[in-house]
Image 1 (cartoon, one colour):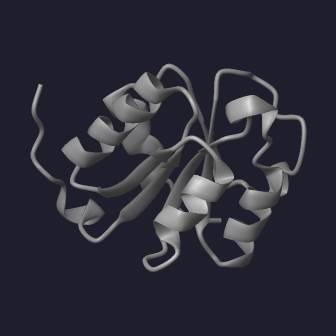
Image 2 (cartoon, one colour):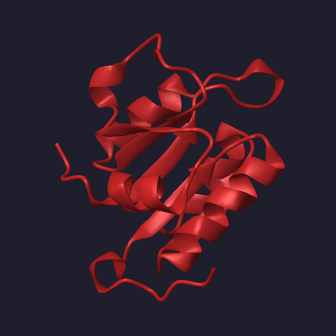
Length: 124
């Protein structure tokens, strides 16, 4: 199902941080189908930082639990400090820490509809 880029998402640059390759690629494709420019997926914080070093995103989709048990909380804090909207992607209903720095939660598995609704939520 191909969708045309949406005018209100023009200029949005997203970062995808997800250690499960097929899940990250699926989110990347959903975002690109919505007209969003995507960096990633990155499987580690170090990879994500390299991807955005010269071109910061407007929004970041971040899985908290990354490769080899790495947790993304400090990275979420750093993104928040830079004014980048953070959307946590999670298969879990409850997030254990620092929810005040998260704009919203995008539950897995993703659908185009819930990705779009999450993107269109006003920044807090």
